[in-house]
Image (cartoon, rainbow, N blue to C red; front, side, top):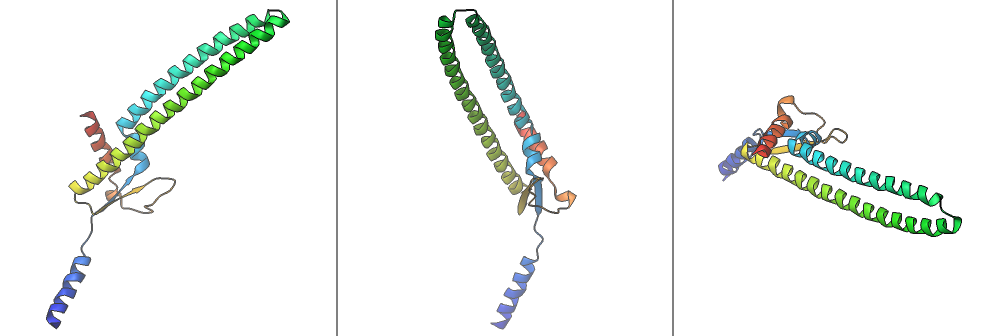
Length: 166
């Protein structure tokens, strides 16, 4: 019985001393440098620019209308200004709703991308026999030190970009 316990103890010590395969990635770099995120930001930057152009064109129209009102008599100005102000408030509410929808759509796509990256890293770890892949970011590092050869950030970015191209 003592021999069995002794062998079990030796086996336990031996297996607990096995080296684990650990790596880390810079989450900020991965998310910000992958092509899919760059394309996503470009898409929403274009939408944002189109929205700003639309708002600016309406503002120019309103400026012209306000200038026309200034040429009217005092009694006409009052009623026209009230109508213009109501119209402007309605448009402003529409613009705010549109902007909130736009921001919400962007956030949904970013959240989806982050989930996709997490899943990719998880599968990467399984495929490459890692016991752990730690994540870190510059302004709140969870990995205070890691050997350069354990940093797989560039490899993960390359593989994500290759998968995105497909």
